[in-house]
Length: 384
Ligand SMILES: *[C@@H]1O[C@H](CO)[C@@H](O)[C@H](O)[C@H]1NC(C)=O
Ligand SMILES: *[C@@H]1O[C@H](CO)[C@@H](O)[C@H](O)[C@H]1NC(C)=O
Ligand SMILES: *[C@@H]1O[C@H](CO)[C@@H](O)[C@H](O)[C@H]1NC(C)=O
Image (cartoon, rainbow, N blue to C red; front, side, top):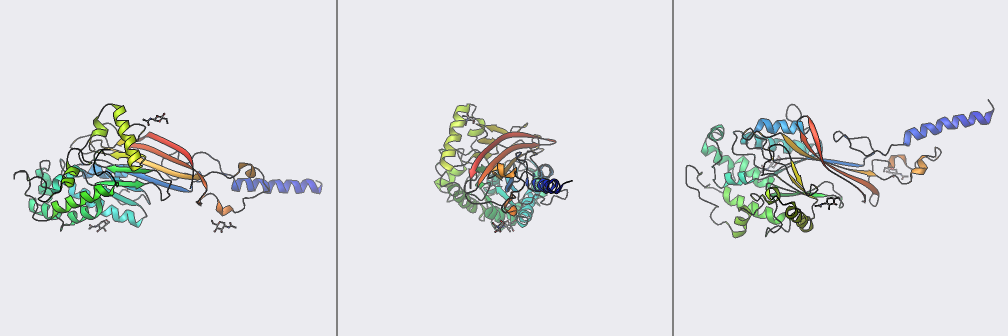
């Protein structure tokens, strides 16, 4: 073989090796919807939200395992995932205490792993706090060691009362990434009403009222439980705004986004909410559909209560959002030239740059036992 031909062959082999080393297919990442995918993502965040659990610790644990948040021993196994629970862990079923205990433990474990557990209060948590125990079962009270112990643990000096005051809120505004361009989501137990007087500044105004009402309710002496005692209503000193937070038009009880049938009305509200508080999706529980997670108005409204508790017998479900940023290749033609290696190979593909162009992909799924259902997929190009 003449020398130039041999040289050419050697160069061709090197070129092929370089192409194989640096070329990456541009297939959309995360299409498996589960484990991190090899599509050159520079950022990935997963969020899982679960609705009403009403005293069913076994199904609570099943749902978390099903959604890949916990392992067989119910320990946090989801790294930096975000977990949101939208309240109503108590009443109807027996094992609320275990559920709160599980959140307490997982919150610590998630934090240690770089993840986050976000707990919200539902109308049933606040009912328990103000002594409205109409849906508390005798089995629950017995399991809790009696009325007195239950009240002690719930009071602002008990472990659970303290935990509620420190770590639970009425509403949560959750950005899916630390970048200013990130989509944000609003979570609360019921429906967020666009005309709610303390909607903004969101969610601080709502949470400030929730905290003061809860502090009032959990400060001993606690209201004697109804029944058997008469209903004593909201605690003495409750302000008008706190009462508004708890009434039928507030975020704990309102069902408008779930139960008003006319889509034009609901989508109008969703649009108004998006304009007022800037979130991409408003997510809540409270109104069960026993078969599925409900989404409306292009999934700008999502209702995640599927009656998971044995007290209802609905399907096990979890909402999943997978968000990723993948760098837009600067100029694909260079990749075809085997003699031009990327200027800085470590630059690609896992480093984020301010001002860089990325494909933002947001995938929203409903997870059920044995299958997943796509609810929404938004893909756009953004500049960080
Ligand atoms: C809030 O949650 C963290 C993590 O679980 C826990 O360490 C802390 O004690 C909680 N705060 C209260 C007052 O319970
Ligand atoms: C839903 O999305 C489609 C396509 O992007 C758009 O045409 C439609 O107006 C949207 N509807 C609502 C209620 O936002
Ligand atoms: C190459 O990338 C690494 C990691 O981002 C960075 O620390 C380094 O400064 C870069 N080098 C050049 C020459 O750009």
